[in-house]
Amino acid sequence: MSSIAPIDAMGQERYGLKTFGYTPGKFAMWLFLASDAMGFVGLIGAYIILRASYVGSTWVPTVGDWTEHGGGGLPHLDTTVTGINTFILIVSSFTMVRALSAIGKGNQAGLKLWLGATILGGATFLGVQVYEYSHLMAHGLHMQSHLYGATFYICTAFHGAHVLSGVIYLSCIWIAAARGRYTAESHSPVELVGLFWHFVDLVWIILFTIVYLI
Amino acid sequence: MHAEHHGSEVQHDAAHGGDHMRQYWRVIISLAVLTAVEFGVAIPLHGREGAILMLGILALLGLAAWKAALVGRCFMHLQYDPRLLSLIAITPVVLAGPLLAVGVFDGRHGPNF
Image (cartoon, rainbow over all chains, first blue to last red; front, side, top):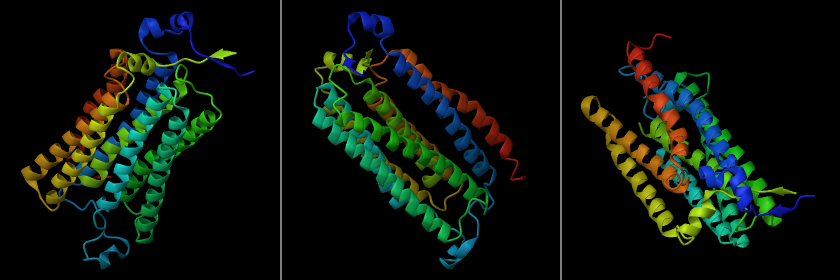
């Protein structure tokens, strides 16, 4: 049987809400996010260190048919399309907080609507990333071409895998929401998926600046 | 039967009248403006070298850190949560600093892979 009961005063005490101000689930999610961030630190750090070691020499390789576009090797990545994609991801964080706010007021329709918008934002981001990859690969930028290609694909694909995981995670929460599983008093899973989604957004903000703008 | 926990969101929602919408709007507008400023800094940097490039890179990193802090504090509710969660959140950043400093200064000897 899977019935849902709002946590009562005794439960709050038992699960630490009154003592610590957060649930074990939230604490565990933050520990997970910190350990996950270490993985990103390693990858982004490797990118920065390699990039810095190429100061004064060619970081962007002269491979593929990009040379047709001015003869200077690969052009800078398309920051306009990715900038719009970045904004889509940021907006999806906004729709996520609206979903949480909606269920905080007991608005189940609002929860489903804003969760759906968040899923759509994540899926759009992934679609644009796939388009960008196919475009770059068609013009000769592969993982094995150069450290530039390897670090670019590893960093962005590792993040993309997180976006995909987030979309799947959000979809599971949406299905549970559609079944009426969450109430104003009991919606911890919505808060936890929100934390994961904002983390994905936050990492992209850093990654976008380092990989695309610098 | 299992009891589901509800997080501190419910508690501070109640404490703050259940509506953070104005703050969320402020944050999303700030993020949009900061992203536009990033483009404004990044585009003129193309092809630059030396001190201007370094200043531009520092400005871009500062803007990215500002945006990330907005997401962490407001969207992830770190400003309302106990300080321990903020300490957990900041730990990877603190560890990343020395790692990057050592790696970058070592790597400045040139690409020798």
